[in-house]
Length: 279
Ligand code: HPA
Image 1: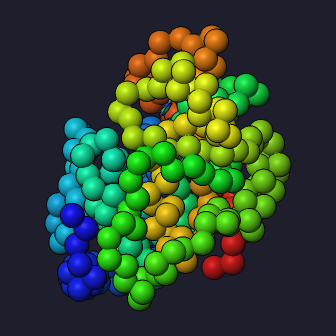
Image 2: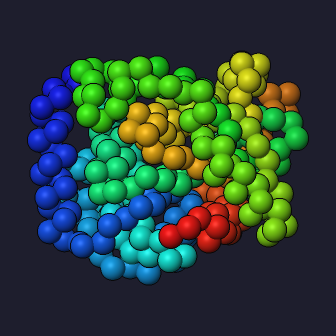
């Protein structure tokens, strides 16, 4: 059940009070990185690291190996906050839990969100290892983080979604890719719940409804970011080719390996975009 407006306000106040007691840094840029794409976070000149389990009202990461941390510091001269470890719907979190950190980021002063994911490529022109600028999305998660009472202080009841991915940031990303001689595909990202990968019939369906890449994240965070009027730049790393007539079996390990291989391209584009943004 979604929580009440007053309860969410109270939670955000408590989370903010705690984080303010830990750091004086006032981040303007928020960063959420996808599976196998964490290297950009390692480039941050850290000023504070806060494990999720210490943060009041933060969900806890289920991924083995690291419990999740919020990183505060500077990247390309910008004060940033980054999530090391994100939350997925298939892990059993509610949409409100998945997107709570985005609300916290906004309250901390973040107005620009950089977000990435590992995705399957369905556009036949895409190849494994490509990077794709997300220009639009389709929400097929069957759920929405804005369901429940709306707090007008956070955002409108019926937020506009005519341009969820900021056209100016998209332009800067294209410019950055051109300068770095990186081939940057463009396309529509569709979010599904997972955790299984798609059947051939499902890939055919997803392609047919207009999606170029498919994954299991990002859309909830972007919906909430737009609800709170943040600018969003999204990049997918294409980890596998999802062509229904030529589909090969795929393991999660292969997805992670492909993401890690292609990651430097994504990192380079994000860094260059940050350099182009005034501080
Ligand atoms: N489907 C869904 N999510 C994914 C895929 C896919 O093919 N590849 C990487 N993430």
